[in-house]
Amino acid sequence: MDSLNKGSFIFSNQTSEQDFELMTRALDASISGVIITDNQQPDNPIIYCNAAFERITGYKRKEIIGHNCRFLQKEDRSQKEREILRNAVADGKSCVVEMRNYQKNGTLFWNELYMSPIKDAEGNVCYFIGVQNDVTRRKNIEQELKQHQDQMERKIEERTKSLRESEDYLASIVATVRESLVVLNPGFNVLSVNDHFIKTFKVSREETENKLLYELGNGQWDIPALKELLENILPTNNPVEEFEVEHDFPHIGKKLMLLNAHRIELEGQFKDRILIAIEDITDRREIERRKDDFLSIASHELKTPLTTIKGYVQVMNRLLPENASEKFKTVLQKTGIYITRLNNLISELLDVSRIQTGNIELHKEPFDFDKMVAEAVENIQSVTKTHTIILKGSTGITYVGDESHIVQVINNLLSNAIKYSPEEHQINVYLSRVSDFVKVSVTDTGMGISHEDQNKIFDRFFRVGEIQQRFPGMGIGLYICSEIIKNHGGTIWVESEKGQGSNFSFTLPLN
Ligand code: ADP
Image (cartoon, rainbow, N blue to C red; front, side, top):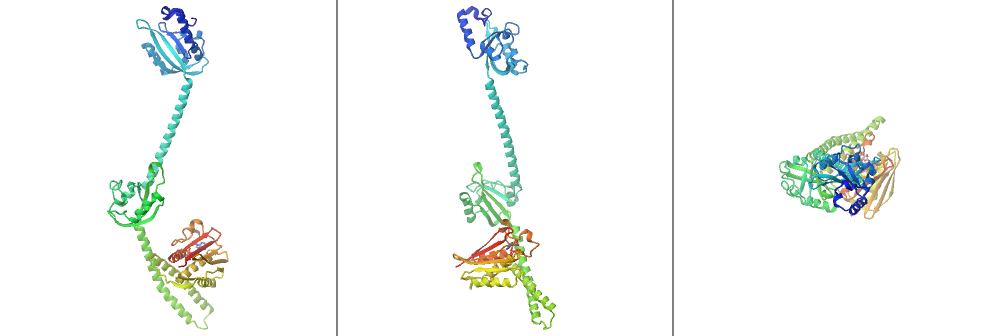
């Protein structure tokens, strides 16, 4: 009874005093703050508040009764919810808002406020009941969630942007690449091709994409050997490397294409796709052919006059007078040495061009393998003053092969070992039989070869960069060696550490 002035309230005439007391108690027991404003009085003062309202706001009843509710907003008056409340009061309607309110000590709390009008018999709004709940905790959680969400969205936006950038970046690489690129699905249908493909083959995207690879053009890729390799890519992960296709292509005529194909190593939507890179090597191959032709013609042309000069020097040697001066004899002898050197160089060049054109001839005869090696070593030793060659081991084998070619390999390995170990004095040659192979190793303790260069030294015309100036040579000796060994069904390899010498070995099968 003490918290509600029943005389001024609508319950006064209709409710018994006991019921009224009960209701007041019930309101005081509620955890929601409840207020009643009198809208018939100026500025709608609060005429009732329950205990929960005092607890939520921190104000005492005597500081509440008679005030307009706005004191709860302190200076924070620009909230749009106030407008909603004002309109609801003016229209006599109920409303729910969530707004920032402040306790007596200034602490902010979020107030979920439900306002409902109470009307008299004529329908005039007399009172408003306001039910309030402190929803600060929920609001904070909501705000935290929102912050997280905003953060996530920002992150997603950044990721999407960087993905888009890397996609553009990749697309620009694919567009710039000077190779034709084709992406296939596991059924060998073309999913996409790059601009270079379209330009090279003078075709449209429509006649290429979504078509079976083997049905493109006039069936240029429908080659059983290629098909087999491509079909193996996905199950075995083995790429197709350097596959040459020579074909009379529609629109562009006879061309030589080099094809490489790999499985695209991606999961998800790009899983199990095959990327084919196609390079037009027609012109390059033609230039190589012309270079080989030139090499072959030039070495033949050089060889003829050289043979004549060699003949003349032999004649001069024969006609050398008894009393010829020492100087004359030395000059003649040196001329002979240089002619032999020049002759060897030209022979090497001729060998290369013979290898290139597939015209190398093997004259296989049985010969004593150990004797052949010993003689080769002896020959090189007889003209080498700087190094000692130590031969160890034996095979006891009569080998059937082209003796002069194998001697050429040993000569080459020995002269390289001497040439590339100028500060050292010993070369070791090991000879052995390993299972059904003969094995020869030539070891020096010279400058060695980096791991990177070891893969290239058997290539035609390759020389390790830094030695170009210091040591004469054309970079074809090891190439010839590897071809000779290959022609005998054997293998040749090198083990070396830069600065610590090299060990060249080859094995030949005994058949
Ligand atoms: P060339 O000796 O005429 O350059 P080769 O084909 O015989 O040609 O050798 C190719 C290259 O391999 C050489 O230029 C040299 O860089 C390297 N090489 C060959 N043998 C040796 C060796 N024993 N030690 C270090 N480097 C070597």
